Image 1: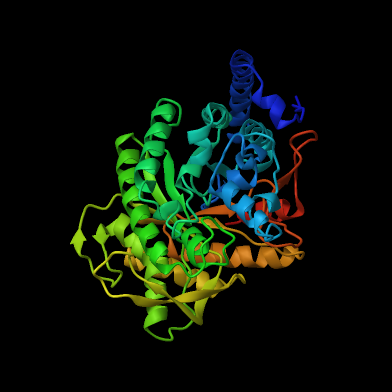
Image 2 (image 1 turned 180 degrees about the vertical axis):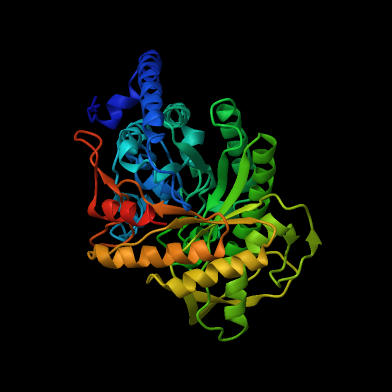
Amino acid sequence: MAIVLRTVLLDDILKLGQQERHWRRTMRTSSLIILAILASCRDETNESAPRIQWSAVNSTMQLVRAAVDSSVCPSGWTLLQEELAREGRGDLPPLQRAYVTRFVTLEEFAQAAVQARHLLIPVLRTLRFSVLWPCWQAAEIWRNDVVGAVRDLQSAGYTLELTLLHHDAYPVELHERTTGLLGGWAHPDAPANFEAYVESVLTRLNGVLEPGSVIYLANEPLSTLFNGYIGGGTWPPGGTRAGKSLAQAMVNLRAALRAAGERVSAAGFRPAIAVNVRPLQENTGPSAALLDHVFNWWLMDALVLGCIDDDFDEHCERTERGVVSLIGITFYGAMRDSRESVDFSLPSAVYPERALALPAIDVTPHAGFFSTALQTTITRYSTAEVRVAEIGFSSVDESLMALWLRRYADAASHQIASPAIGLHTLFSSAEFSPGEWQFHLVRGCVTEPCELTTWGRAFLEIASQQ
């Protein structure tokens, strides 16, 4: 039976009474359980799943309108957008107004994903979505929707993974762009604020999220920090050439993620880290070597190996217990030394200041660099499980995208004993520049039936052969 959803204004949703929401969710969950039973019966007649375990990765902030609404989720993104607009820079992409807001609420996303399941089985069974730190802290309605989405998606038969931090920036109280760029993760209250958020998430999901489920502490955290402190000023907190703030933000992030990893494990889930590994195309000197270490390895060394490198010199000032044994690589190209640099050190440190090369990023799909990222990570962290947490391709030529995917899948299959690959993304999602974006696998599912995109059909054909 097709489910047709009525798209309503966000204001209407926010005014729904809790009693009505509870009744609607209870009735829907009962229906989903029936659908899941039917789906599981159908799965038994299909061929066995492919050797690669495929998943779909979804950035909630890029999908859900409520996630970028300041009345629901006030965040550092929102404040920076307003500040840039007042400075006459409001047209700068990407920020919130450039995002594709595919669904009105997280609840609507979950319903659409349930409807799309029959198109994906048995090839793709796992979904990952981000919880969103500022939204969780600000709105009870958001917390309820997260819990409801977890219940609904699991009831429909999905294996669910969550991401605690996925370029959703930070709550508004940590945004202090006018005070020396010590806002965001450089703010002294950031670690405690994040740890309280994680503790709240784990408490609410106790008995809801399946025990042993993977929870990614962060997705591409260093890419976000680089963009936020030494990029073009359009990512929160809006810094440019703020190398000392970047260093402080990294130290704060490290402390918060280590504490979060311990809490996730204690709650009976599996902590993971999704990192954007970018091979360095050429090493032009000390500043480029520092870039490679700081961008690719410094945080993973601390989380996986317990190597605490306080002065960014590739040596452990102390060694503690590792808190993560699962690494997910997100791969979007390589980098090189741009021949520009920024002064990099902690603001009050006794350690010497260094020149950190600014990266020039090449996002062209490249199987050779992808293979290098895998092999280097596997070798460096030999005791950890390595997966491909996220890859994505976009071209108006689906045959070219198919070629890239086959090459990436072959590389993962040859280097990882039990390969798992997350594909960006299930539904249409925001990107950061104009173009004919073909990332998503499924269209429809809200006011019209679900159907595979041309890329979705190509993916299923390739994935079923792997």
